[in-house]
Image (tube, rainbow, N blue to C red; front, side, top):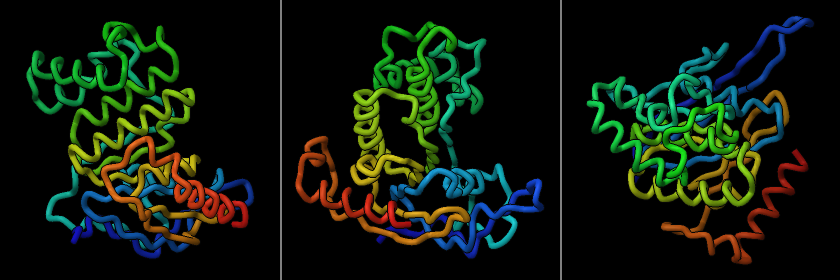
Length: 249
């Protein structure tokens, strides 16, 4: 049985506005377990990204609590909707940067970065500058930069939103491989229902703002999963049911 890693209790978040305050999140209760892949679905503005920022420590909730249940906080990495690459570093150096920060020597860091460059399909672009490659390529670099750290907890905020449909599908499958190899805990915000069903162990559905959890669904498909899963009738039925739930929320 998987052990709980993060416990979120009665969490709420408010932000100042011209009218006083607006509530982004309301009474969120959620437990994430070790080696679990959880996707959050919800309409735009429902507080999904706000929750991710609270889990990273970038925001403090205005009510409730978040607890890490291990003696040491898990090593975390986050991939935002924007790549946030360093413009004065080329592709390979951007990917290798987290390893260098943690004391890995130059040669080893670059060797590992080259492996990840191949995994995300950027073999021919390792020496390019971020500003000379497409937005989709920049996001693939950002994903590789997060995954190279092999963190216990990976937080992904619409990481494939800037990619074309074909590359998005390929990156989703690559993310599956990463999970199967390293088994990190993953919490991912996505607007793609089919992507969530393919990737997740569990899907959490948010209401409209202020966001609160209206439904949690355990995904019944066994692992390892492949692209062929998306062609099964049961997959289509689950996607349809979730779409109906989101439309009605």
